[in-house]
Structure formats: structure tokens, C-alpha cells
Image (cartoon, rainbow, N blue to C red; front, side, top):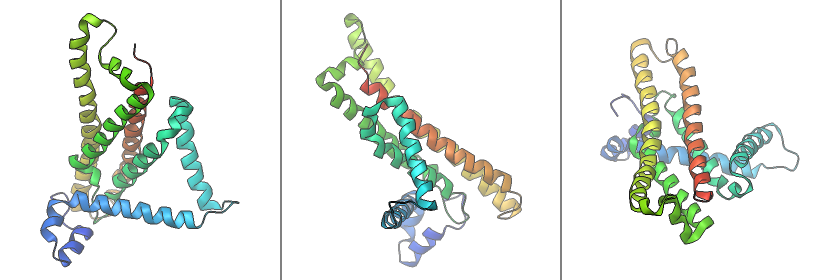
Length: 230
């Protein structure tokens, strides 16, 4: 990647003869790394679960419980069915965003292919939820209240739903790519730690906000699919 002169994972893949793949698909490698990191943390956490939780368990339980309650307040009890997707995508995006703040690593969400893949997952699940709740009647969401204008509304609604994919993916990509670029310039000009510190704190805030925005928009789309057509 041009914004990073040195990436640890790329060097590791170069050492095993996969340097060309690493340079072309650095976002894929770093996505694998985030997934592996989260899986390992989850396995360690599950192994240490106790009936009387300690500090670490309390911390994670508060986060997960807070996310679930927040989502259920918006969606109602029916929303619990897709909470695992919402929680997973929030945590994955947040950790991916933070990864770029570590020198020698790269945020996979700073690549449009990563954000687009997650947006497509949200898009597909939205319509699966719509069909699950309404069956064949879900088509009414695309036809509007006036049957004479149904063909036109179908085209407009289809374009609107496809635009959601573009909105989700480009918003996240643009903000994280901008954060990565600014940090790379500051790291190059002023060293790794001193001058970029304010930007690092801002980067943490941006990482959290962008993960939260993606999660919120996904929930809103799911709620729209669950509602009756008007």
C-alpha cells in the first residue's frame, strides 16, 4: 500500500513467497488478521466464563448487553434475531478501523472492497428480513401507495435500495482512508509518536463513530424491512 512504507503482515507473506499477493491484497490479509484476532479473543473469553463474572467478563458483558438493549429499543423484541450480525459487524469494523492506528498495520476498512462487501451483506440481510416478516407481500415496499405509479415507484425504490450499498461502503471507506492518509503523512514528517498523538486520539474517535454509524444505518434498514408497507 502506498500510504504505508512498511507493513508487518506484508513482510511476513513476503517471507513465505507470497509477496505479490500481499501487496495486491493487503486489505484481505489485514481482514484475515482482524478475524483471527477476534476469534482468538472470543475463544479465550469463552474459556474463562464464570457464573460470578470478574472484571474482564463484566466489561465485555456490559458492552454486548448495551449494544443489544440499544438495538432492541429501536427494533423491538423481534430485533434480537439479527443482533449477532449487528454486534459482529460493529466489533469487526471498530477493530479494523483501530488497526490502522498501530504503526506497521493497515485498516482493511480503508479499502473500498472491504466496506463494499459488508454493505452487500447488510443489503442482502435487509431483504431476507423483509421476506421473512412479510413473505410475498414484501414487494409492496417497492410499489408505493398509488397503484397507477407502481412501475415508476418500483424503479425508484430499487435505485434507492441499491444506493444504500454505495452510501454505506463509500462513507466508511472515505473516512477511514482519510484517517489513514493523514496519519501516514504525520508519521513520515514527525516520527511515530509525538506530533501525531492528537490525531491518534481523533482517529480513535473517528473509528468508533464510523463503526457506530454503519451499525445504526444497518439497524434502520432492517427496521424498514420489518415494517408494514404504506
